[in-house]
Image (tube, rainbow, N blue to C red; front, side, top):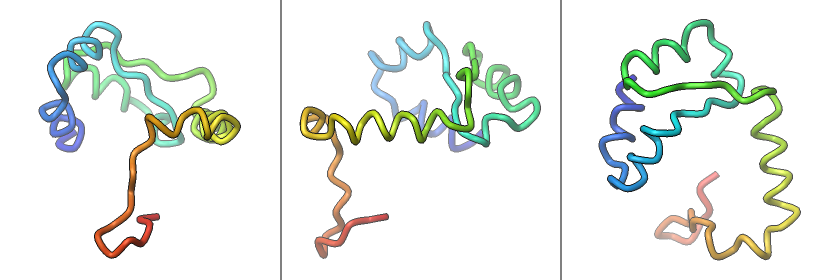
Length: 88
């Protein structure tokens, strides 16, 4: 919960407003932990919901990005360190 609150505190106000209205969407295996969605909703006072297939959502999304990687270069974040090695 501390990590989630820290991210929300450092989120720009215009984006935070959208998140407050639309809520948090959970994906991945961790989102299946019993009661985690309710805990996050309670602690953040925001709506929280799970995607239809949380176990494969991240992999499917990655596949979509890889199919259109040239078009998405402008919105991708550079993750190289100072010594020019990728952070994986």
